[in-house]
Length: 479
Image (cartoon, rainbow, N blue to C red; front, side, top):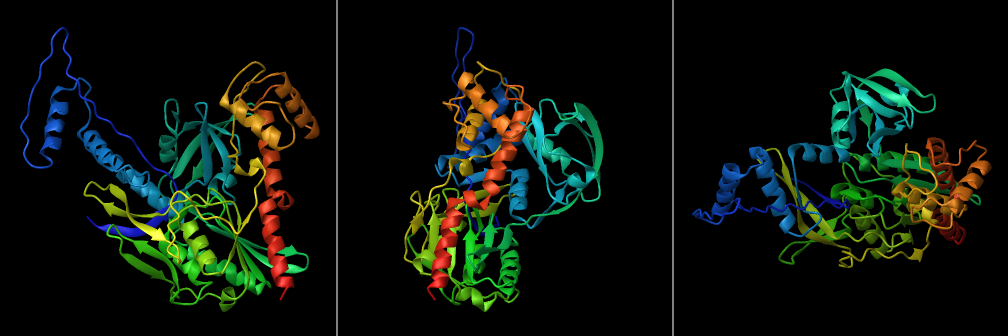
């Protein structure tokens, strides 16, 4: 067993596995006993009983992997789990700096596989794939009965190979065939821009996760921001689920003196190990990052490695935290490889802030709490179904919530499509200057999603961002 890199990740992953064995004959029952020796002999015993007597036959690997999942589940820790070889590869890829594919986000809604959006500059965008296209066939095979995971697996492949897709385009009511060549799709975790706030230049930098190349991206982005005249730094980790500890350590180190303790690791015996900032030889951070004002934006979706960063900035007095209390994940996982290619992801340590606070389940409180419009916490979905008055569905409840957040109150958000909901739809579509059928159809859902995205992309509607910018302007003006 070989240990891989330590990481702190905020995505909940717990799979419950329960094996129940009942021998029940038709009017009679039999009991059989099997001797077992040693601590784990009973596992072999159960394996023999199931493979020898179960009317529902399973593959050997299914039983073994079920037992592995069960052992991880018994721990009772949502962050400790067993990953199959495929799941482990997928998890590693999610934190990697690039992946091979066609570059399109896909979702499954009511049994249909819908394109959410093609990645800008990706093979799918160049081939003409559009949002709301419905995947019908992949390489001549229909997708009936497949899971989203299986569909994604069919689309992915080696660089330079091609995949043939047939999509149904609802706008034209036609099927479209296209062949897309797979290529490397860069995964960017850092975005940046200069924001003007009443004559002051603020360097905004968004971190979607702490991946393999995030520190390199951070170095390049901050260098450009400083070059463009940034007088302060606004770090946005809202919705950031975490990632690699070495990445957050490098990023924190760019704003703190070398050899500063930015967190502690506590093992099962309670022994503390300090984590100190280092200046990697391959990364040359601009020294101005250690002196300019810093504000960090967080919300309830900021977890794990994000909290390591906010906890360090807060405890060391290096940054001001704005937003809402973070998620509250104070454990660190290690991945251990198994001989079958799978991995066990296990919580092996607690992590503590520089002041030795353990924030597990509590989160990190902000220095300035600012709540957002509920629209900012909604996961905007692609919906291809049609709903009429008197119908009840979660998709209707979703639309009602979005309408209410946009100022078109339907009177209820429980998923029942009544007359008041219909009036809210009519008012919304009229304001958007789009012909409406009166139903919740694809045109309505497309318009609703576009309107919600437009609202969220307008910085004037982002109360947390506005407050953070105001604070930084005050700090700069007072100097």
